[in-house]
Image: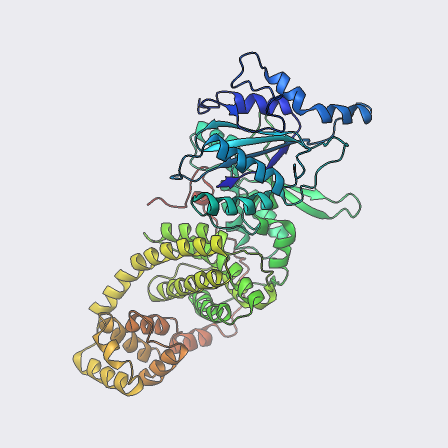
Length: 562
C-alpha cells in the first residue's frame, strides 16, 4: 500500500481532477467513501445536483474564514492531497475498508487527529483512493504535518499487516523522489522510455563518479548539454544549492524544467557532494604510469579491502565504502567494452538505491577507494584478466552489501543490492567465460602442470583436491605460468593468494585464484618501463573525463542496448 503526500493551493482544481475522467479515462465511478460530515458533504459522484464548486466551498469553509481574518491573504499550500494505492495483486477493498484506511492515514499524519479538519477520500478506481483535506482548522491553526509522508508510510505498513495485503518494504527517507504521473505522461507523449527526472539522475551520478570537485561536476554536466543553475546565498554570495534541466525539456512557456539536486536523489544535494569530494586531491601536473593497467589493479585491490571494511562492523566506515562502490560501478561500466557493458550499467543504476541509507558515512575512511575510482574514469581499456578480476571483486563486494543492509533492516537497500548483484553475476559470466576459455586453451605442457599440481598439494593441502578437480584448473595453470614469467614464484604466489581469504566457501576455488593472480603486476615489465622512462620529460597532455556521446542520449535507459 503506497501513500504519496503532496500539497497545493487549489481545492477546486483537485476536486475537478479526482472526480474527472482522468488523463486516459482511467477514473471509473468516482465517489466519496468517507468525510468529516457524510450527511452534509456534497458528493458529485453520487448526487446529480451536487457540483464541484459546492464541495470545494464546504472544504474551504475554515480557509475562507482565515483568509478574511488575514485581510484577504489566503493561507499558502492549504490543500493536502494523499493518494493511497494497493499493490498489484492485492485483494479488492470495500468502500468501508477504504474509509477506515483514510481515517487512519489522516490521523497518523496529523491532518485530523481530533476530526476537526475537513477531509474526504474519493474513490475512482478499484485499487486506490485520493484523500483531500484543507489544512486550516476551526480555530485557524494549521495541523502539525512534519514528516507526514513518512508517518503515512508507517501507518500503511500497519494496515497491510491487519488487512492481509502485500507487505511492502519500510522506507527510511533516503529513497529518491519517483516521477510524477504528469512526468511519466510527458515522457510517453515524447516517445521517451524514461522521464527527465530519471535521465538527469543517472547522468548526475555518472558525472559525479568521475570528478574531483563540485566545480568540475558543474563543468562536465554543462559539457554534455545539461543546464546548470547554481543557487546563490543572498547574504554570503556563495553557492548553496543547484538545479539541473535536461536538454529540450521545457514547460508550456518554453522555460526549462528545473530539478534540484536533492530532488533527484538525497546524495546528489550540494552538501552531500561536497562531503564526498572534499578529500579528492587535484594534481597540478600530469600523472604518468609505468603500467597502463595500474588504475585497474588499484581499484581491484581497493575493492577487496572495501569488502573487509564492510564486514568489519563499523557502520560509518561501511556506509562510506558502499557509497564509493556506487561510483565504482558507474566508472567500471563507462570504461568496459563488450557484451557485459549493458549489465554493468544496469548494476550501477540498481546500486544507486543501495549506496545510501540513514547511516551517516565517514567518507574519509573510503578516500583510497574514491581516489582509485576517479583514476579509473581516465584509464584506458584493459582487456582480459585484470578487467575480469576487478569485476570479480565488485561482485563479492555487492554480495557483502546485500548482507550488510539485510542485517540492519534496510530492506529497500538490500533489495537494490540484490538486483545489482544479479546484473554483476550476469556481466561476470559474459566477461569471464571467453577469458577462462582462452587461458584453458593456452595451458602449459604436462611437465609444468604436474609441477604445479605438486605445488598446490604442498601449499594448499586442505583445498588441493577441490582446486585440481575444478573445471577452471587448466586456466589456473596458465595464470601460474604467466606469473612465473612475470617474475613471481608459483608456490609463494599461491600461498599469498590463498591467505587473502578462505577458499572453502568458494564455488570455484580455481577461479578465485585465477583472478587474485591476474590482479598482480608484471614485475619484470614494470621494472623495464621504469628504466626506459627514467629521466624523460613529462607530457603536457591532461586527461579529460571519459564521457562519450551515447552516455547522454535522451531517453536511453543504458549506454548500450542488449
